Length: 455
Image (cartoon, rainbow, N blue to C red; front, side):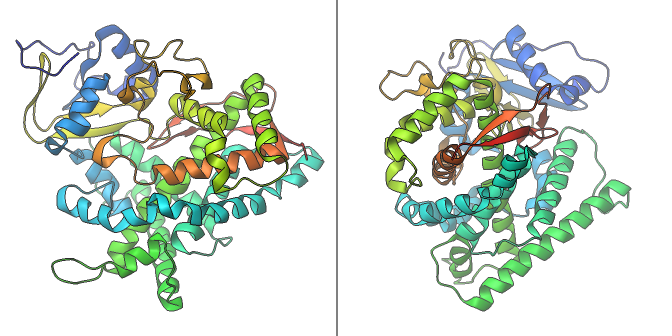
């Protein structure tokens, strides 16, 4: 398939239902709806939710065009900006053009490859310290909610490593508040008409209170860091030391708050989601788990994983890649064309919304054999890849791919072996894992596991 100019065809569409179109189908079961329309109508589908037209694109060529070749024509859609900006402010996820480019330049050195080794020891140490508490659950046959445990673990890592922040009991409030706001933003994104936050509804009052809680915590973090005058190579220091190239002005505390909140939430919440799904998959595929354990034992023994061990842990990386294929944390994202565009035989009007879903793309039968099967060997570096490069986009692609992708992969490659050296998880009998399609894809009611000590 190529992007070329040919006679225009009508974009296929599923039947709509009155003024709201396909809204109820998408709201109720978004994964099933997008899977069904893709299967029935092809790799480009138009559907309507209320007064807004959406174009769902599910082919690597389309993804390349939107996110790489013609990316300057595609900005964050207005609905996303309207609903996410009150939460995240003017951060990397909510800005475009020069504002985004400036923020990216400031943050990029912190995620450079030569910094990864400096972070690795902190990650291993924090992981070992946190998972010690699971020994009590193992000794007493208690049940753990893996979702909650991974959220706390990754926050214990990200907060001090990237922001020099001491993790306290108050971080539980932070996690709960982010969870409330993420669900609210996701709800508003799929609701065509929403009331602005200044309208004093009960939901808006709760949202405003949650935003105040986040602001209090993040501004306190900034103030404490400024007072200590640390000179560490981390994101907090990079933001405080940054200067505008034209004016020499530094970032205000509000601007720093927006970057911290964006990257802190992205850093811990998405990684926690990925780890939760991975250990769930291992609990359902004992052969994969045993092969993974064998690699950990042969490569590490009882020694904690280090940065130097990562390249040798090939199967660990394969398992992570396959888990991210089946459960990409950012399961969908949207763009809006500034000018009309053309994709092959089809025209995309300006100011509509284009959806791309890694979750659906990663299960496309044209590019993945047995796409619903958990098979880490797909990513064996010794074998020739059988999938198109842009059929696999767990971190996005192009200039706006996830800035922390290498940091996130390193976190998982250090966390997973350490957990496997100490514990084994068993899904409790008859527990049904449900999917929650918020901004990130995570287990709706958690994943409840019994933990067994293997040390």
